[in-house]
Amino acid sequence: MDLHREFENIISRKKPNYSISPELMLYLARYQRYYHFDVEYEDLLRWEHSMAVLDESGKDTLWRSVMYPNHEQEEIHNSLRRIYVYLTADSDHGVMEHLRVASVDYCLFGNSNPFRIKIINMLNDNHDYYYIKRADASRVYGLELEEMLSPNKVFYLVNEATLVEQHISGIPGDQFLSSSIIETGHNPVRLAKEFVKFNTRCFARLLGDMRSYNFVVDMTPDFDQMQYRIRAIDFDQQSYEGRKNIYLPQFFKENYAFVDMALSKLGNESIEQYQNEERSLMRRRVGANRYQLQRLIRAMRKDKISDARRVATLKRQLAEHHEDKGFLRLSNMGSILFKHINLSLELKLRIPPIK
Image (cartoon, rainbow, N blue to C red; front, side, top):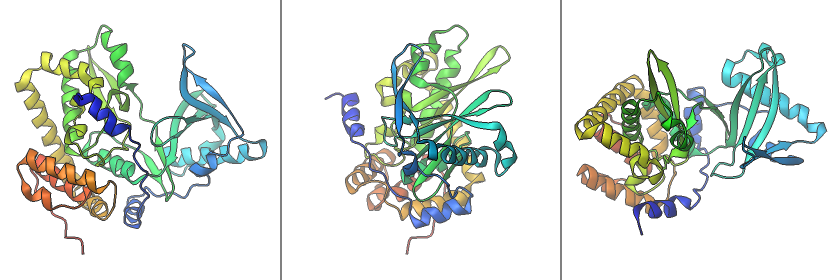
Protein backbone atom coordinates (compact mmCIF):
# COMPACT_ATOMS: atom_id res chain seq x y z
CA MET A 1 0.00 0.00 0.00
CA ASP A 2 1.49 3.39 -1.01
CA LEU A 3 1.81 6.24 1.47
CA HIS A 4 -1.04 8.32 0.00
CA ARG A 5 -3.52 5.44 0.04
CA GLU A 6 -2.57 4.68 3.63
CA PHE A 7 -3.18 8.33 4.56
CA GLU A 8 -6.59 8.25 2.86
CA ASN A 9 -7.57 5.11 4.76
CA ILE A 10 -6.53 6.68 8.07
CA ILE A 11 -8.27 10.03 7.56
CA SER A 12 -11.41 8.64 5.87
CA ARG A 13 -12.49 7.17 9.21
CA LYS A 14 -14.70 9.96 10.46
CA LYS A 15 -13.26 11.75 13.48
CA PRO A 16 -15.58 11.78 16.50
CA ASN A 17 -16.88 15.07 17.80
CA TYR A 18 -15.29 16.06 21.13
CA SER A 19 -17.45 18.20 23.40
CA ILE A 20 -16.25 21.45 24.95
CA SER A 21 -14.87 20.71 28.41
CA PRO A 22 -15.51 22.98 31.46
CA GLU A 23 -11.81 23.92 31.51
CA LEU A 24 -11.86 24.92 27.84
CA MET A 25 -15.12 26.82 28.36
CA LEU A 26 -13.50 28.89 31.12
CA TYR A 27 -10.62 29.66 28.78
CA LEU A 28 -13.01 30.75 26.01
CA ALA A 29 -14.96 33.00 28.37
CA ARG A 30 -11.72 34.61 29.59
CA TYR A 31 -10.71 35.51 26.02
CA GLN A 32 -14.17 36.63 24.89
CA ARG A 33 -14.87 33.70 22.59
CA TYR A 34 -17.98 32.57 24.48
CA TYR A 35 -21.38 33.73 23.21
CA HIS A 36 -24.97 32.81 24.03
CA PHE A 37 -26.72 32.10 20.72
CA ASP A 38 -30.44 32.72 20.16
CA VAL A 39 -30.37 29.99 17.51
CA GLU A 40 -28.09 26.96 17.73
CA TYR A 41 -26.83 24.35 15.30
CA GLU A 42 -29.55 21.84 16.17
CA ASP A 43 -32.26 24.48 15.54
CA LEU A 44 -31.05 24.96 11.97
CA LEU A 45 -31.55 21.26 11.21
CA ARG A 46 -35.34 21.72 11.33
CA TRP A 47 -35.74 22.97 7.77
CA GLU A 48 -38.89 22.30 5.77
CA HIS A 49 -37.57 22.28 2.18
CA SER A 50 -34.16 22.12 0.50
CA MET A 51 -32.70 22.29 -2.99
CA ALA A 52 -29.30 21.51 -4.46
CA VAL A 53 -26.78 24.34 -4.83
CA LEU A 54 -25.14 24.12 -8.27
CA ASP A 55 -21.90 25.72 -9.43
CA GLU A 56 -21.52 27.85 -12.57
CA SER A 57 -21.26 24.76 -14.77
CA GLY A 58 -24.39 23.19 -13.27
CA LYS A 59 -22.53 20.63 -11.16
CA ASP A 60 -23.88 19.69 -7.74
CA THR A 61 -21.70 21.29 -5.03
CA LEU A 62 -23.01 18.95 -2.29
CA TRP A 63 -24.47 21.97 -0.51
CA ARG A 64 -28.26 22.22 -0.01
CA SER A 65 -30.07 25.54 0.25
CA VAL A 66 -32.58 25.11 3.07
CA MET A 67 -35.85 26.90 3.83
CA TYR A 68 -37.72 27.03 7.12
CA PRO A 69 -41.46 27.10 7.89
CA ASN A 70 -42.95 30.58 7.48
CA HIS A 71 -43.75 30.91 11.17
CA GLU A 72 -40.09 30.22 12.11
CA GLN A 73 -38.08 31.76 9.28
CA GLU A 74 -38.27 35.40 10.38
CA GLU A 75 -37.18 34.57 13.92
CA ILE A 76 -34.32 32.37 12.66
CA HIS A 77 -33.13 35.01 10.20
CA ASN A 78 -33.21 37.73 12.87
CA SER A 79 -31.08 35.53 15.13
CA LEU A 80 -28.64 34.86 12.28
CA ARG A 81 -28.33 38.59 11.63
CA ARG A 82 -27.61 39.25 15.32
CA ILE A 83 -24.87 36.61 15.31
CA TYR A 84 -23.29 38.16 12.24
CA VAL A 85 -23.32 41.64 13.79
CA TYR A 86 -21.68 40.40 16.99
CA LEU A 87 -19.11 38.42 14.99
CA THR A 88 -18.10 41.36 12.78
CA ALA A 89 -19.09 44.58 14.54
CA ASP A 90 -19.03 43.58 18.21
CA SER A 91 -22.37 44.82 19.55
CA ASP A 92 -23.31 47.61 17.12
CA HIS A 93 -26.84 46.41 16.40
CA GLY A 94 -27.65 49.63 14.56
CA VAL A 95 -26.33 48.05 11.37
CA MET A 96 -28.84 45.18 11.54
CA GLU A 97 -31.55 47.05 9.69
CA HIS A 98 -29.34 47.12 6.57
CA LEU A 99 -28.63 43.38 6.60
CA ARG A 100 -30.57 40.52 5.07
CA VAL A 101 -30.07 36.75 5.20
CA ALA A 102 -29.83 35.82 1.52
CA SER A 103 -29.46 32.07 1.99
CA VAL A 104 -28.81 29.29 4.47
CA ASP A 105 -26.93 26.33 2.94
CA TYR A 106 -26.22 22.95 4.54
CA CYS A 107 -23.10 20.96 3.68
CA LEU A 108 -23.54 17.23 3.03
CA PHE A 109 -19.88 16.25 3.45
CA GLY A 110 -17.09 16.62 5.98
CA ASN A 111 -16.89 16.07 9.72
CA SER A 112 -18.72 19.18 10.83
CA ASN A 113 -21.64 19.34 8.31
CA PRO A 114 -21.69 23.13 8.56
CA PHE A 115 -24.36 25.64 7.69
CA ARG A 116 -23.17 28.49 5.46
CA ILE A 117 -24.97 31.76 6.06
CA LYS A 118 -24.94 34.39 3.29
CA ILE A 119 -25.51 37.95 4.50
CA ILE A 120 -26.22 40.87 2.14
CA ASN A 121 -25.81 44.55 3.01
CA MET A 122 -28.76 46.18 1.27
CA LEU A 123 -27.06 49.59 1.21
CA ASN A 124 -24.42 48.47 -1.27
CA ASP A 125 -25.31 44.86 -2.25
CA ASN A 126 -22.07 43.64 -0.71
CA HIS A 127 -22.31 40.08 0.61
CA ASP A 128 -20.41 38.09 3.21
CA TYR A 129 -20.51 34.57 4.67
CA TYR A 130 -20.12 32.88 7.99
CA TYR A 131 -20.55 29.27 9.18
CA ILE A 132 -22.42 27.56 11.98
CA LYS A 133 -21.19 24.12 13.10
CA ARG A 134 -21.41 21.68 15.94
CA ALA A 135 -18.92 22.74 18.59
CA ASP A 136 -15.88 20.45 18.57
CA ALA A 137 -12.98 20.80 20.99
CA SER A 138 -10.38 19.74 18.40
CA ARG A 139 -11.48 22.50 16.06
CA VAL A 140 -11.55 25.11 18.83
CA TYR A 141 -7.98 24.25 19.85
CA GLY A 142 -7.00 24.48 16.18
CA LEU A 143 -8.60 27.90 15.79
CA GLU A 144 -6.88 29.20 18.91
CA LEU A 145 -3.48 27.93 17.80
CA GLU A 146 -4.03 29.49 14.37
CA GLU A 147 -4.69 32.84 16.05
CA MET A 148 -1.61 32.60 18.28
CA LEU A 149 1.01 30.88 16.12
CA SER A 150 0.23 31.92 12.54
CA PRO A 151 0.24 35.36 10.86
CA ASN A 152 -3.54 35.04 10.38
CA LYS A 153 -6.45 36.33 12.43
CA VAL A 154 -9.49 34.11 12.93
CA PHE A 155 -12.85 35.24 14.26
CA TYR A 156 -15.18 32.76 15.90
CA LEU A 157 -17.65 32.34 18.76
CA VAL A 158 -18.64 29.24 20.67
CA ASN A 159 -20.86 27.88 23.42
CA GLU A 160 -21.37 24.35 24.70
CA ALA A 161 -22.95 23.02 21.50
CA THR A 162 -22.50 25.53 18.67
CA LEU A 163 -19.50 27.04 16.89
CA VAL A 164 -19.70 30.11 14.64
CA GLU A 165 -16.81 30.98 12.30
CA GLN A 166 -16.26 33.94 10.04
CA HIS A 167 -15.51 33.13 6.40
CA ILE A 168 -11.81 32.87 5.46
CA SER A 169 -11.44 34.34 1.98
CA GLY A 170 -9.16 32.95 -0.70
CA ILE A 171 -9.05 30.52 -3.60
CA PRO A 172 -9.35 26.86 -2.46
CA GLY A 173 -5.98 25.18 -2.98
CA ASP A 174 -7.30 22.50 -5.34
CA GLN A 175 -9.02 25.10 -7.55
CA PHE A 176 -5.90 27.25 -7.50
CA LEU A 177 -3.77 24.33 -8.70
CA SER A 178 -6.22 23.37 -11.46
CA SER A 179 -6.67 26.86 -12.92
CA SER A 180 -5.09 29.92 -11.33
CA ILE A 181 -1.56 28.56 -11.07
CA ILE A 182 -1.19 28.41 -14.84
CA GLU A 183 -2.26 32.04 -15.34
CA THR A 184 0.41 34.54 -16.30
CA GLY A 185 1.62 36.87 -13.59
CA HIS A 186 2.01 34.30 -10.83
CA ASN A 187 5.40 34.11 -9.20
CA PRO A 188 6.31 30.43 -8.61
CA VAL A 189 9.21 31.32 -6.31
CA ARG A 190 6.98 33.27 -3.94
CA LEU A 191 4.34 30.55 -4.09
CA ALA A 192 6.92 27.90 -3.29
CA LYS A 193 8.31 29.99 -0.42
CA GLU A 194 4.83 30.35 1.10
CA PHE A 195 4.12 26.63 0.84
CA VAL A 196 7.38 25.88 2.69
CA LYS A 197 6.35 28.29 5.45
CA PHE A 198 2.83 26.85 5.59
CA ASN A 199 4.24 23.33 5.82
CA THR A 200 6.50 24.45 8.70
CA ARG A 201 3.63 26.10 10.59
CA CYS A 202 1.35 23.06 10.28
CA PHE A 203 3.95 20.67 11.62
CA ALA A 204 5.09 22.91 14.48
CA ARG A 205 1.52 23.17 15.84
CA LEU A 206 0.39 19.64 14.74
CA LEU A 207 -2.42 20.63 12.37
CA GLY A 208 -3.24 17.59 10.25
CA ASP A 209 -4.91 16.77 6.93
CA MET A 210 -3.90 19.92 5.08
CA ARG A 211 -4.73 18.60 1.63
CA SER A 212 -5.21 21.28 -1.02
CA TYR A 213 -8.98 21.49 -0.53
CA ASN A 214 -8.51 22.21 3.21
CA PHE A 215 -6.61 25.45 2.67
CA VAL A 216 -6.98 28.58 0.55
CA VAL A 217 -4.50 30.78 -1.31
CA ASP A 218 -4.95 34.46 -0.51
CA MET A 219 -3.28 36.86 -2.97
CA THR A 220 -2.35 40.52 -2.42
CA PRO A 221 -0.93 42.71 -5.23
CA ASP A 222 2.44 44.24 -4.33
CA PHE A 223 3.81 46.67 -6.96
CA ASP A 224 4.49 44.48 -10.01
CA GLN A 225 4.46 41.23 -8.00
CA MET A 226 1.91 39.20 -6.07
CA GLN A 227 2.18 38.24 -2.41
CA TYR A 228 0.74 34.85 -1.40
CA ARG A 229 -0.59 33.58 1.90
CA ILE A 230 -1.73 29.98 2.34
CA ARG A 231 -4.38 29.74 5.06
CA ALA A 232 -5.89 26.68 6.68
CA ILE A 233 -9.69 26.57 6.63
CA ASP A 234 -10.26 23.17 8.27
CA PHE A 235 -9.09 22.68 11.85
CA ASP A 236 -10.85 19.39 12.71
CA GLN A 237 -7.59 17.43 12.62
CA GLN A 238 -5.77 19.48 15.24
CA SER A 239 -3.63 17.07 17.30
CA TYR A 240 -5.86 14.09 16.52
CA GLU A 241 -4.04 11.67 14.21
CA GLY A 242 -1.19 9.41 15.27
CA ARG A 243 0.96 9.44 12.13
CA LYS A 244 3.57 12.22 12.23
CA ASN A 245 3.55 12.75 8.46
CA ILE A 246 -0.18 13.57 8.43
CA TYR A 247 0.86 16.88 10.04
CA LEU A 248 3.15 17.66 7.08
CA PRO A 249 1.22 18.92 4.00
CA GLN A 250 4.17 17.97 1.77
CA PHE A 251 3.22 14.27 2.02
CA PHE A 252 -0.26 14.53 0.46
CA LYS A 253 -0.46 13.84 -3.27
CA GLU A 254 -3.01 16.67 -3.62
CA ASN A 255 -0.14 19.05 -2.76
CA TYR A 256 2.56 17.55 -4.98
CA ALA A 257 2.42 20.49 -7.43
CA PHE A 258 3.46 22.81 -4.58
CA VAL A 259 6.15 20.37 -3.46
CA ASP A 260 7.57 20.07 -6.99
CA MET A 261 7.55 23.86 -7.27
CA ALA A 262 9.50 24.22 -4.02
CA LEU A 263 12.09 21.62 -5.01
CA SER A 264 12.61 23.04 -8.51
CA LYS A 265 12.46 26.77 -7.74
CA LEU A 266 14.10 26.97 -4.31
CA GLY A 267 16.51 24.13 -3.69
CA ASN A 268 17.38 22.59 -0.33
CA GLU A 269 19.40 25.54 1.00
CA SER A 270 16.60 28.07 0.39
CA ILE A 271 13.99 25.68 1.78
CA GLU A 272 15.96 25.36 5.01
CA GLN A 273 16.35 29.15 5.16
CA TYR A 274 12.59 29.72 4.86
CA GLN A 275 11.85 27.02 7.43
CA ASN A 276 14.16 28.74 9.90
CA GLU A 277 12.59 32.12 9.13
CA GLU A 278 9.12 30.81 9.88
CA ARG A 279 10.23 29.15 13.12
CA SER A 280 11.79 32.44 14.17
CA LEU A 281 8.52 34.27 13.46
CA MET A 282 6.60 31.65 15.42
CA ARG A 283 8.93 32.13 18.39
CA ARG A 284 8.07 35.83 18.35
CA ARG A 285 4.35 35.05 18.21
CA VAL A 286 4.72 32.71 21.18
CA GLY A 287 6.50 35.49 23.04
CA ALA A 288 3.58 37.83 22.40
CA ASN A 289 1.01 35.23 23.48
CA ARG A 290 2.99 33.26 26.04
CA TYR A 291 0.51 33.26 28.93
CA GLN A 292 -2.51 32.69 26.72
CA LEU A 293 -0.78 29.71 25.08
CA GLN A 294 0.07 28.26 28.48
CA ARG A 295 -3.57 28.55 29.58
CA LEU A 296 -4.74 26.89 26.37
CA ILE A 297 -2.29 24.01 26.76
CA ARG A 298 -3.30 23.59 30.40
CA ALA A 299 -6.92 23.06 29.27
CA MET A 300 -5.79 20.79 26.45
CA ARG A 301 -3.74 18.57 28.77
CA LYS A 302 -6.87 17.87 30.82
CA ASP A 303 -8.95 17.20 27.72
CA LYS A 304 -9.48 14.18 25.51
CA ILE A 305 -9.22 15.02 21.81
CA SER A 306 -7.90 11.72 20.48
CA ASP A 307 -7.77 8.04 21.43
CA ALA A 308 -5.06 6.07 23.25
CA ARG A 309 -3.84 4.30 20.09
CA ARG A 310 -3.21 7.55 18.20
CA VAL A 311 -1.58 9.16 21.25
CA ALA A 312 0.77 6.17 21.57
CA THR A 313 1.68 6.28 17.86
CA LEU A 314 2.35 10.00 17.75
CA LYS A 315 4.47 10.17 20.91
CA ARG A 316 6.56 7.25 19.64
CA GLN A 317 7.13 8.85 16.22
CA LEU A 318 7.90 12.28 17.67
CA ALA A 319 10.30 10.71 20.17
CA GLU A 320 12.17 9.30 17.18
CA HIS A 321 11.91 12.55 15.19
CA HIS A 322 13.29 14.72 18.01
CA GLU A 323 15.53 12.00 19.44
CA ASP A 324 13.91 12.61 22.81
CA LYS A 325 12.52 9.68 24.80
CA GLY A 326 10.72 12.12 27.07
CA PHE A 327 7.75 11.90 24.69
CA LEU A 328 7.23 8.28 25.71
CA ARG A 329 6.24 9.34 29.23
CA LEU A 330 3.41 11.62 27.98
CA SER A 331 -0.20 10.49 28.13
CA ASN A 332 -2.27 13.02 26.17
CA MET A 333 -2.21 15.19 23.05
CA GLY A 334 -1.92 18.44 24.99
CA SER A 335 1.34 17.35 26.62
CA ILE A 336 2.68 15.98 23.32
CA LEU A 337 1.87 19.23 21.50
CA PHE A 338 3.46 21.37 24.18
CA LYS A 339 6.72 19.41 24.19
CA HIS A 340 6.75 19.34 20.37
CA ILE A 341 6.27 23.13 20.14
CA ASN A 342 9.07 23.69 22.66
CA LEU A 343 11.50 21.47 20.75
CA SER A 344 10.49 22.60 17.26
CA LEU A 345 10.80 26.29 18.13
CA GLU A 346 13.66 25.90 20.64
CA LEU A 347 11.63 27.32 23.51
CA LYS A 348 11.78 26.79 27.26
CA LEU A 349 8.16 27.28 28.21
CA ARG A 350 6.89 25.57 31.32
CA ILE A 351 3.44 24.74 32.65
CA PRO A 352 2.79 23.65 36.25
CA PRO A 353 2.03 19.91 36.43
CA ILE A 354 -1.60 18.77 36.48
CA LYS A 355 -2.68 17.88 40.00
